Amino acid sequence: MLSEEEIKFIQKHAQDDPYQLSLSKGLSGGLSLSKLVPQIQARQKLAHKLPTWIANHQLFFPPQLNLEQASSEDTALFKAELIQGKVIDLTGGMGVDTWAFAKKGNSVTYVERDEKLNQITRYNHQVLVGDSIEHIVGDGVAYMKEHPSQWNYIYLDPARRGSKGEKVILLEDCEPNVQEILPYIKQDTRLLLKTSPLLDISRAIQSLQGVNQVWVICVKNEVKELLFLKSQEASMDPIIEVHELSLVDSLIFRAKLSEEREANAQLGKLENYLYEPHAGVLKAGFFKLAAGQQIHKMGNNTHLYTSKERVESFPGRQFKVIALGNLDKKWIETHLPSGKANISTRNFPMSPEEIRKKWKIKEGGPWTLFAYQDEQQKNVVALTEKCPVN
Image (tube, rainbow, N blue to C red; front, top):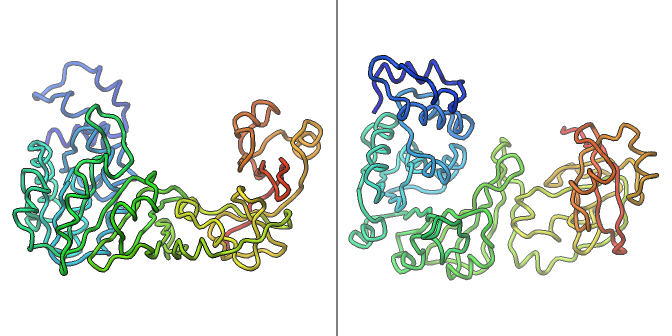
């Protein structure tokens, strides 16, 4: 895929601006900027997402569109811990998940209908893990139907773009349609499904006619993907786990939606500490369970929490309360003489940008301003300082 001269060129210009580099002229040795500039651009884009891949100078990266839906290295390795045995990846794509499955010692078959992409991925897999992955050019669902009893796990990451290139979210709008695969889940065959982080979890469970377990996968407080595991013993009320992969112990919350429905969260006024739930906990819908016994919610539809004493086990960011009041010019001038703060809003009629613009508040500094609707449905603002992580 890449000659020694091309690899040296990419290494030499690894930090250069791709656009400026594309304007260069007079390359020697028959080198092609149209081939090499996209490689430099891809490596810059994927530096944090795929560090092991980027560290290997022999790898060749596919076009931009194929990079977008590829899993990160961390999320791929997480998925590899969930499966074992003979695995078929129906929508191989760039092959990051397939690589992770093979790296864990599984027998993996990669299927991709795009012949050029299949060729690139085959080459990259051989560089990374040798010949341990079987590569098939064709339609993954059709291939699976022809070999229905061979797999311990079927892995599916359906394309989330419509026929006109628009982004889609609902399972039934993705390609391939997961409903085609459900009849092939047998006693010894399970399905691991990766979906958009925007997908409604409850609706997905209904659409899949129940699942064994759901994982909300996050990196640095951002939901990256949802995973659904389905077998013949699926449940309409599965365990949902929230994982933060930037932590050594990634599991930060675990519960069922039935427990959330049955929970009662106390409402109360702001006390000494304010809590902002992790994005994964909110995505899972655990608004009441996040409170627990020592913490209460600050409003029915305000997903902020408070307590008199600090509860360090709370799954999310924790703040010490400095002041509480109404969002007006006098309060801002009194409590923010520097005119600088981070701003967060919950169930509030103004966005952080609108607040920042109206009261000329600069971004940054040690303080965070929370604008929210309290337990009496009044719009208030709290000035806080982030608690140190112990």
